[in-house]
Structure formats: structure tokens, C-alpha cells
Picture 1: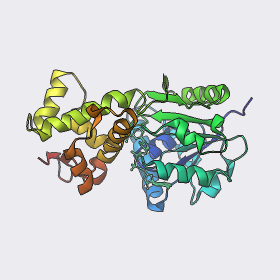
Picture 2: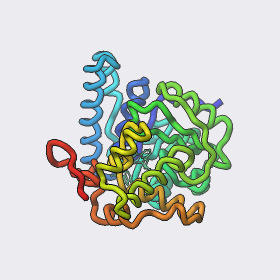
Picture 3: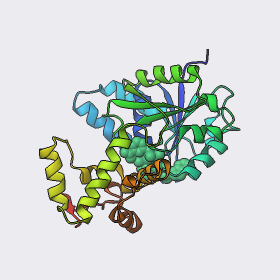
Length: 293
Ligand code: NAD
């Protein structure tokens, strides 16, 4: 049997990477956190501290659990430090070349029986795995945003993923207190296959002038009982991530119903990527969000 996982390396310390490090540390794993931009790791560590403090404030975790968890997360200046990890989770930008390059860099560093996982929202696990030396030890572990709050993790087996890798991943995900939905390895899996075309349709609804930003979000919050409107949600996910997922669906399924809305493309071209850049369908720089159209 493959050794169970004790230490986890996370590549990419953005909004997902910091959440993954957070839940792993709270579950007792030693965590190494890396980012191509060192400042991102420092920002992630500060975010994790802030988010855990909020959890303590709400009585969700104890002060002691937080104090034990925080020192378990260590900064990895380079991927060379990943020689000690049992599982490396890639959560860098949603660009296939970026992910291939990270796996190529990790390959010579990792222990022979280490497992590799990607948190990709939409890229083929089979294709990512095929470029690694051990596709049998590669799996898709797709967390939801915000990781500390969201219960679900989709597990996606590539064509070559072994049963052992799958079973180890199930134990790992359950140890984080998360619930698993198994998804086959087709573009965008389950959640984003359904969710992101809905967001794209909301952007078309805005683009065609059917409703304003506020009307569209209000309609879906109160009319469909969604906790957030689709445009608010798009800003939360990141408009670049939404666009990448639509491109993957469009290319992978070749059906025109998946064509990205030109307005979504324009926001991404402007660098208005949502909350993470302070502007998207809403402007977050003031006291409360203001629609940008
Ligand atoms: P993000 O832009 O917040 O963070 C990505 C981080 O990766 C950045 O800090 C960037 O500096 C870093 N990075 C880029 N290239 C790198 C490299 N070569 N090595 C190390 N770090 C590198 O994005 P995010 O929202 O955290 O998304 C990360 C991944 O998680 C993507 O694959 C995305 O599809 C997936 N995902 C996102 C969501 C979501 O709601 N945002 C949900 C589930 C999964």
C-alpha cells in the first residue's frame, strides 16, 4: 500500500492555494506553500491567519487548534523543498502550459511514491497526467471556493489513475472534513460544467441589455433562491478563471452554446478580474460594491 499522506505541498498561493493550505494544516498535515511570486505566499499566510482568527471568533475552531495549525504551514521558496512531501497539489493559474511546467519541475524532486494532484477547474486530468512520469499517481482534487467553508471536493480520475491513488485521495479528502462527488474526466467536470455556462449566460444577459448588473443578480438571488447573483459570483471566482473554463468547454465540447461572451473577454482584457483586482462587474474599492455598468 502507498503510504498515507502526512505532508502536503501546495503550488500556487492564490485564493485557492491559501484555502487548501488552511484546511490541510487544520487537519494536522505539514504544509509547504509555494508561489512563483514570493509576496503571494506572505499575503497567503496573512490571509490564513485572518481567516482562522475569524473561525475562532465564530467558535468553529479553538484558539489552540489555530495555534497548532499555523506553524505547520511553511513557506517554500522553490519547488526543490517539495522533496519531503507525500502529496503535491498544484493550484496555480488555470493555464495548461503553466501546469505542465510545474509538474515537469516537480518530477525530479518528488519522492518516488509521492502523489500529484491538480486543483484545476476544467483542464483534462488525463492530459495533465500523461505528461508526468507516473500518470497512475496523478488525480484531480477539485476544491470549491472558499475552501475553508465549502463542503464539496470533486475527485476526478484520469484514464491512468490507479485505484490506490483514488483510495488514498478519498481518505485524504475525508480527513479534511469534506464530502466527495466523483466526476468523470470531461471538460469542467460537474460543478463548473453547470455553473460557469450559467454565469456566461448572465454576462450575455448584461451584454444584450436584458438587465442591469443589479437586476440580474437580484433576479437570480430572489427568483432562483441562489445565495449570490451570477455576476457577484463571477467576481468572486475571478473573471479570468470563468473565461478559461468557458474556453475549455468551447474547445473540448465544440458546441457553440459554450462560446464565451465578448463582454466577459473585455473585462478580462481590461484586467478587471473581480474581487481579486478590486474591480469586475462590481467596483470593490469603496465601502460597498458598486456596479461597473
Ligand atoms: P489565483 O490567481 O488567485 O492564484 C494563482 C496563483 O498561482 C497566483 O498566486 C500566481 O502567482 C501563482 N502561480 C502562477 N504560476 C505559478 C507557477 N509557475 N508556480 C507557482 N505559482 C504560480 O487563482 P485561484 O483562483 O487560486 O486558482 C488556482 C487554481 O484553482 C486554478 O487552476 C483554478 O482553476 C482552480 N480553482 C479555482 C476556483 C475559484 O473559484 N477561483 C475554484 C476551484 C478551483
